[in-house]
Length: 84
Image (cartoon, rainbow, N blue to C red; front, side, top):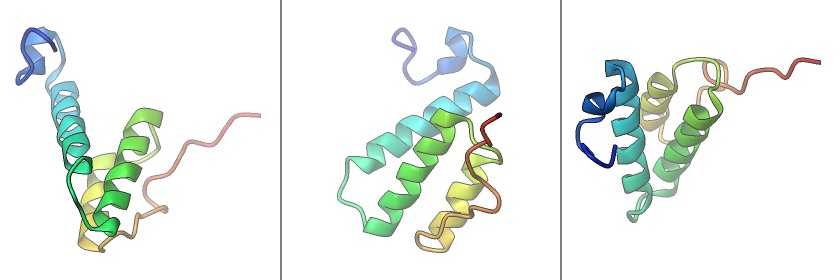
């Protein structure tokens, strides 16, 4: 990533991993800006979804959340159940 910051695929990441890395970086960048609270909530939940490898497509749920102005679709993206 440090050698090719704008192109993680050149550092050995798959296309899907590269896309996730770049989207994650953009989300973090947007979080640092002055955003409406609902959008900040969507971004923060997206970051948590990615970091904790939730069930569902974090990206699709993020886009849904944006469209609903802050309503995260818990029925589609949520933390994995802990095994007992």
